[in-house]
Image 1 (cartoon, rainbow, N blue to C red):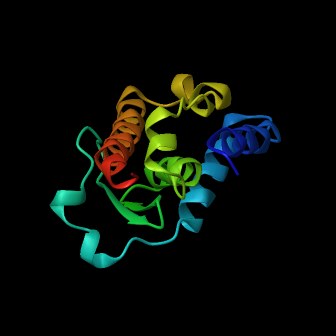
Image 2 (image 1 turned 90 degrees about the vertical axis):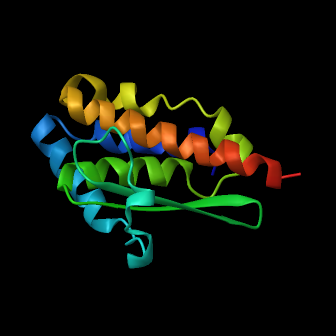
Image 3 (image 1 turned 90 degrees about the horizontal axis):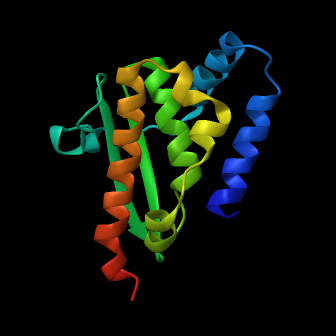
Length: 140
């Protein structure tokens, strides 16, 4: 699936819920379903700067694609990072670097998250795109 197809799928999933309490519960569930990051990557070098919670993000480059793993010590934040991992993981660095992530606005996250969580989400996306840009040279 393309990045946009995954975003559209995520948007469709959120349209099933009528209120934000249900949406938050779904975000929490997605965090619980996030494959765990290897303990060796839960170190300061992999912490996302700009997040109020602790969020670890690791990128592997395999067969021309970036595979992200992540974790957080906060349940909502873990759900947020799981969404971004789902959308961006298993794509080429060029696809990730050039992706416009519209699902954040379409789902309504920007207006329903606190300023600190919203900034943290943007920091996660920024870091994933930075990893992709750094790996683009290996695509050739």
